[in-house]
Each structure stands twice: as structure tokens, then as C-alpha cells.
Image (tube, rainbow, N blue to C red; front, top):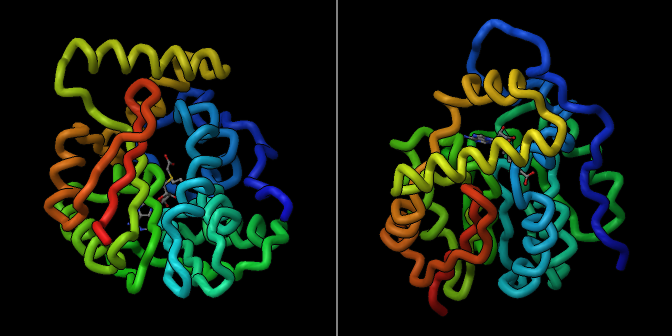
Length: 251
Ligand code: GEK
């Protein structure tokens, strides 16, 4: 079987390169166009996490179950799941509420030749139907969900998950210790500088995301996952203040 063809950068992200009027970040057509370049250059570890989603999906997908990628954007994690899921009778569903993302995602799914069908839904993940799941991915999506809605969403995912099933949760986190928070933030900015972003781009993007991307501590995520009904929660990846967790529901 061939490897997944993840969305590849066709256009460089220069959205914050010129001085602009401050406004909140939105997943619109301009962002969708540059998204593969933007996420690789902005999220430390993203290019490692995506292929590991394939590995984890292979281990946790169960025959005849549903597999969800919530906040799928252009489908990088969806494609990794598609190639990892070893059961042809699984139903793989990608959900995103940005029409611009879903339209482009459709294109990338069509370019990939794996036979497992993919259903794409342009819907809010807070309202999308979730059932009989074995593996669900929230790859840097929960951080954009209003904090007051996060418990309910995680409870719905846990309830929909079969015994032995799992959730992959990747997030930007906030450190409990203020000095660590400052050090990790500096390292994240160094990462962005090393990837060609200017100080103006870094600071304008930061302001645009301030009210939209709300990070929480690792302890808050662990507590929520346990309270929602996942029995085992492990951190399997961290790069600076970006992490990925695996939450498992006991068999
Ligand atoms: C990847 N997982 O490449 N309902 C549906 N979609 C949402 C919602 C919501 N309530 N809130 C945000 N989104 C992807 C990357 S990006 C992360 C995920 C980032 C969607 C939003 O439209 C966007 O496409 C995605 O979640 C977040 O593996 O840009 O840092």
C-alpha cells in the first residue's frame, strides 16, 4: 500500500507579514490556502505527530467501528488514520466547520489512493453525531473550542467510544510554572523565527490568536479526560509547549 499524500505546501504563509488591523484569527479561505505551510512552520512537532497518528490508529481501530478526525482542516490526520486503520469495514469521518477547509480537504482526500472511504462533514464538532467509535483524533482542535464547551465535548466522545478505544488529543498547553511558561514561549518563537517568520509576523499572529486559541495546563487536560470516562491518559509527545496525549477507555 502506498504512503499517505499529506497536504503539501503550495503557497507560503505571508498572512501576517504586513502591518494589519488587529482582528481575531479565522479559518477562512486565505488561511486554508496557506495552511500546510502555516501549520508546519508554526506548530513544533506537527510533522512528527501526523505519522504517529497512523501508528496509533493501526493499534486502536476496531473492526466495523467509526473513526473520527474532529477539526480535520485539510485532512493530514484523516489521511494518516486512513492509512493506519487495518479494517476495511471501518467508517472514517472528518469533521470541520470551515467550509474553505472542507472543500480543500475533499481535494487532498481524492488525490490519495487508499481504498478506505472517507466521509467529510462541514459541521460544528460540538453538534456532530458521534457513535460506536474506536479511535478519535483531536489534533490541535480542542484549543479552539470555547473552554465552557470542552467538558461536554469530551464526555460525548468518551461515551461514543467502545471499550478498548482511544482518543488522540494534541494541544498547545500553558505551563503551571510561570518561568517555564516564559521559557517555552520563547523557544516556540525561536522555532518560528528559525522557520522564517519575522518578529512582526510572530507578534501579529499572536494577537490575532489571543481570544481564539485558549491553552490549558496538562493537569487540566488529564483531569478532564479522566472525568469524561477515559481510564488511562498518557503523554506520548511533547515539543516545547505543544503536546499530544493518548486517552484509552478500558476494555
Ligand atoms: C491537522 N487537525 O492538520 N467545529 C469544527 N471544526 C472546528 C471547530 C468546531 N467547533 N473549532 C475549530 N475547528 C488538523 C489541524 S487546525 C489547528 C487542526 C491549527 C477547526 C478549524 O476550522 C480548523 O480547521 C481546525 O479546527 C484547527 O491535523 O490551525 O492550529
